[in-house]
Length: 624
Image (cartoon, rainbow, N blue to C red):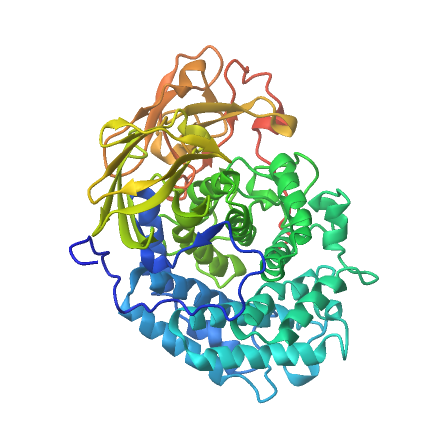
């Protein structure tokens, strides 16, 4: 694109993704772009950059490979981490083009491939404890799943044939083992769900190779759910049971299986496979989703509206947050319904970012809505999952669609950002300069060498109403469709400018159910928190109360996002001006924070002990 804006750090170093051999039977309504086509700045862009520079690039990968270099590994699921890193690091490299990360990717992939045994085995167990539920060795298929995901992603963006060959050997071994020698359920914890979640990469491998055996194996996996004692995932959800009443309610593994079911629907064209997925999504959003965009307590889906907030409840496992993001991205692709983009936004700006230290170098395993954040530097499933979730924010920002058979671009981010792609037969770059989240407008400038005809869609986030568009300072008519503001296909010329004005709602949400008497503040998509460490001399986090004027927030100057608003200690106290920060930033210095505060007009002396008091539970440990 001669004369058009270039993306920093991205260029010829990142090749085009390898196309699938098998076309989708159910084509995506919204097509993902390569991360190399997108660049995000602003608040979220800084978190994405920190994830790459301070985590993926710097993390020591030797411990992630140790269980393969010397079997058995030090932990039953130590084998999952290198595949997760490969997945996240490959997407991050495709986004930045960082040659240092590329070199690290090549080394780690080569080292992992070299550990594969002649029969295709690429796990961390000794021969007598493979593909079963042995003590200390019961996550074998699970580790192979993540090796498949990591190496297939690496193959997709590098074209590295040894990586694909390694994946085929792994899948051939799985195909020879299940069900010929045993049921796959006999090799998976949580009613078999851990093992059957290999469905996702098996379907992708089928599409990359065209080998019908892998599709046959994928269909067997789904059929195995209905074996005696199996999880009955699809049947249970089709029958209207909640996710907490399906299998054993284990959130991470169940969501992973639903992601795989989306891939199978896409590959085969069988839309009926999406019904249990939609039912699960509806149930989670209605009954089991935190205001911050995550689910689970104690790593399981709980009863309707049972959403404890305290550290001891072990809520919002980062693996669950990441897999919830994956599921919403799948459904956004398959349907182009903006409600899935809304949930992605909720998770990215809140629970996922809250689990990530603002420096980007560390993650929380669980992230409570009050208390202290337990950042640590250990090797855990969540330390490996969180970086995967953060890189997916790039893929969720812009999507290519067909609008009445004509190319269109769906814009799902309000951040300053850029995207380059082919629309209407022309290379097009769109550059969005935004004042979000400090002001309510952005400008999108279109760059192209020749005029081109295409449509535009802008996601109408619930907090952004009213949304208005102008083209070259004149009103631009848009239709409302599935949560998008839709500009029908028209001819665009170089330099056309679309001005977007949106609301930036300051909201106070009153809690119900088990935490009635509390309220939470939000600024646009950001759920806010009261951080005791930055409010010296004001009420403690446990005692702070909101007043009716608390939504009259004032944004503070400076590089960090912070707001001022009134709070009280006890009813009758004169309000004091407190500082609120995004939940994502709260507690980063180790202090107490709280999202749900005492609601206006609730007397601190009569408030429920359960609503405002700390909860104490004995830690059950890593419940994987």
